[in-house]
Amino acid sequence: MTWRPVDCHAHSRHSDGALTVPEVLERAAALGVRPSVTDHISRDAPTNVDSPRAVAEYLDDLEQYDVLRGGEFCWHDALWREIPAHTVRRFTHRVGSLHSIRLANGSFFRVFHRDLPDGLGPSAYMEAHVSSLESLVTDMPVDVFAHPTLISPSLREIDPHELWTEAREERVVRALYDAGIAFEISNRYRPHERIVRRAVDAGVRLSLGSDGHSRQQVADIAFPLELARSLGVRDEDLYDPTRHGSRTGAFDA
Image 1 (spheres, rainbow, N blue to C red):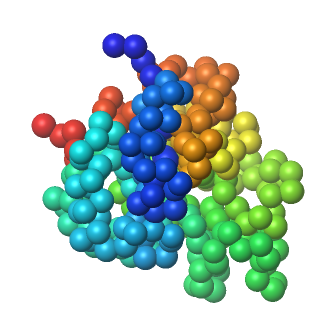
Image 2 (tube, one colour; image 1 turned 90 degrees about the vertical axis):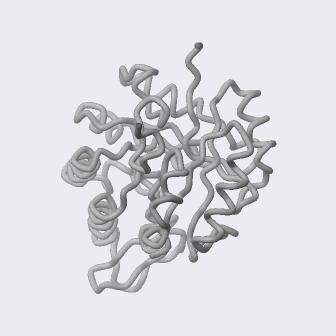
């Protein structure tokens, strides 16, 4: 069988995507990509999948199609802890996200807010981001960490090599490696090459993700695939739950 890249992270109308599930499949086929539907599953995200019952109904729908069945879970929201084990096994893979980070005072800050809280500078923000990531990979039994370098819009104009010091990158890579969680190369929130190279050198598996919401975005993983190949990663080593398994137990004998 001819190898095809897997888009492990794309959205449909089950959450905030523009396409129906059949339209996601159609778009992926046009681009030569194996599709997944990985909608938001949270009480604190734009989604219809916001309860254990809604999760089961979401999976009921996905099981009608030849598509990988994913879910994107917010670390700061407790819903992921409430999904029963028999439902978890119906997912082919699960993705964890830091849509909010925990600050030093214990409060949470949404990463999509443009302005940082008073007194929180870039360095303190990055420390909170990395510390939250370390907690996520310890807490959440996920297969992929989505858009690892997603940060507040107010910081995105700063040189990433200044924000992401080598020490911070080492902490991220070590946490992912120890947890056996893949590093997503996101097409929507593109990481800088140095941190991806560091992940590769440390033996962290890479995952391709469009994080597609619109028709144009869904299944567009050309940049992630090109970057992975440029770093010497073999196509067959890129995360594919059907090849590499999943912590959901979906592929256990």
